[in-house]
Image (cartoon, rainbow, N blue to C red; front, side, top):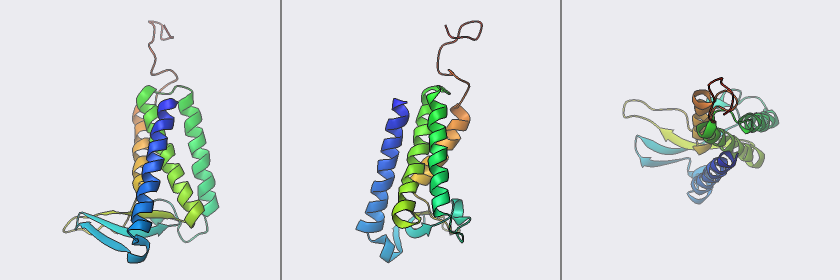
Length: 164
């Protein structure tokens, strides 16, 4: 659980720090767009009140989405705390929980998630923005699928499949 906590802590901190820097210090909330490495990386302000890609953004789902993220984070912590899959699963859980809680803080403070990263190509303009928390949630969920396992998967096994 220590690894899960520290990964989650640093993801949460990186997410909140980058959002503060870009949204407030660079004033992206007012400027709306800053070309960083055009067209590949642009800071483009998007207040997401919904879920991925703005789905359900027309509905007032703020508190439902906050509760959902907190419950899922709690379940992931409970699951990984039961020794599911070893160090990689623990790190993945930290990514997921740290990212989810970073977006929860946005919903509490602003009523929406502050998305600002936009990646495009010269011949394709991506209409969506995302943030560090979104990346962490995605990588954490994928890591739990790949590295999550049966109880004690990270421990040595005897010939009969039980702990040594």
